Image (cartoon, rainbow, N blue to C red; front, side):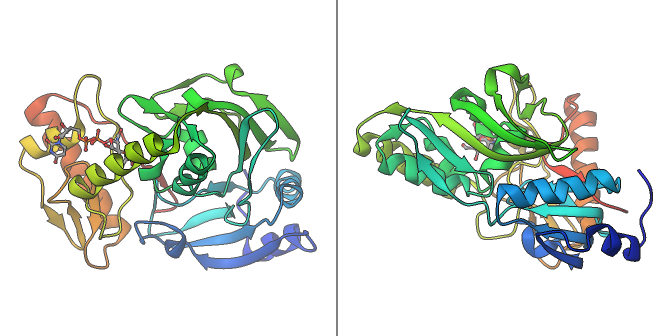
Length: 303
Ligand code: EPU
């Protein structure tokens, strides 16, 4: 990948049929509210515009990064090199004749969960407490213990890093715990196969998941949800609790005093504060419990 200057970004993207902005703060687009600016941000309004942007990116070999709801990324203080693709405008949901529920990548996952409930379709209740987007949920196989996105996913529409559009049946893609082996590119939509169920039963499940979440998670401070994956046979939240790090702070970042697997931005934290806290947790859990924690949050950007 060539290193680009601000002028070369403008040249490469001149006339591209998509809203483009330069040197844009990314933190407002993330749930943790930390990190530096993106060199470029693209805000496609349609899949055709995603294709146009990806063709320019491919033609000029620009680095790119797809930002979903920004609820599972930690942007470093130096900002993000290249083009950040933001998919908020891709926000259509439709229920097809075949019974598949179709959603564009920028649809919020909780909104899709509520929509499915309204259609009397069960299978996405868990999505109600996952504050990301459909695209992000597909890319990282978002879920809660015992339920995950790829169980109900049937097909993905995708724009690859050459700007080619394709649809991929989900059974052709290897996936695992919080991961999916997708090629490089942009998930633009997903179709889900859900099961008909009485609306009140779906609603009851959603309510009980929300109640549990409200009781156990620090929802009033900016955060990225679970920082780490749960190790096989254990829960990170419990491990962090047991080693006594709940409430521990570095700068403006704090390990939540409510849930050990959350770091919250208490007071104008920098990405540096959050990264130092992550390091501290990893070290202490390894030292005292012999467990190597693996990140769930994606760290991007320059130091
Ligand atoms: N626990 C403690 N101390 C803590 C936190 C948790 O002992 O400080 C214990 C709990 O009592 C429970 C166990 O650890 O026995 C698991 O905790 P919890 O039920 O909160 O679930 P989790 O595994 O920490 C997962 C998802 C969350 C999702 C909740 C819904 C992962 C990595 N995380 O959390 O997803 O909201 O279940 O219950 O699977 C996310 O992925 O970003 C996310 C927030």
